[in-house]
Length: 156
Image (cartoon, rainbow, N blue to C red; front, top):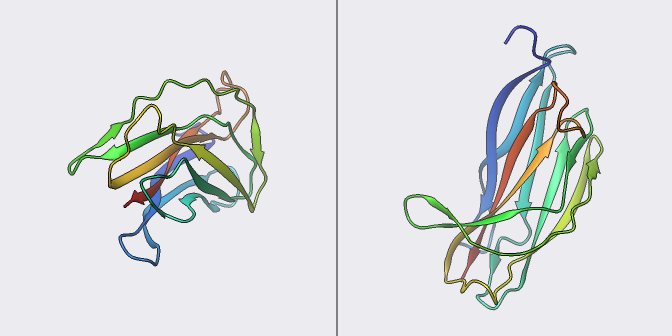
């Protein structure tokens, strides 16, 4: 739109592998800031490592802010399982005491994702962590843009 500060070009990037070496899949967030120099901006979230045993309790993901602006996220997340044709959200009943986390330009932060295996029986397969980042802190800001990031991982 003509008056919008950001023109969205969403390209969600996940990292997954069925081998020992991580294979990046198309999974990054990019958007172009129109009021500045049309700088290409990217956000990346990946699981490190991206393969786990079935007894896993936690997964570590890293979000990297390869942009020239601050972005905001929280501790909330969801987990999805790939059923062979679509992603199904795993029903977890948890309370997350959420806080605002700021990622400065060119900064990376790690997040520990609790899988709550007492609530869900994780079988072998493809999973992904889903988190949202935004361009402003305030929900009611008319220039706020939110973007969903995903990071794939496998359970063997």
